[in-house]
Length: 106
Image (cartoon, rainbow, N blue to C red):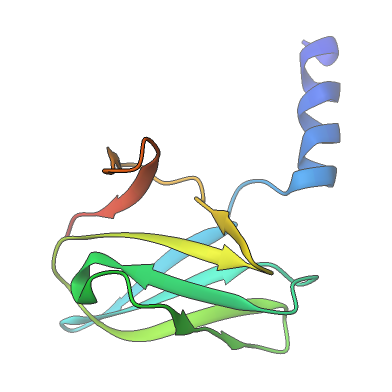
């Protein structure tokens, strides 16, 4: 058990792990939070508007947020310091470019 745990902890310290990304629902709107305290830029793209990039707002705790999304199904990903990042998410869907997007289902 310990031999399995050490590589996982090492990977988490290098690349980050659980709670990197979470959703808060308020009535019929969503706020997405993405933990990336070392990032200088986080942008969000979703199928809601054909994957237009939106700047996330950095909070003092190092999380970034995107608010005001409708509580309906969509696909999404983040662009962190210019690199596409797909956080750990429950549902994924393949895209037209040979990769995948996270999929939000209400």
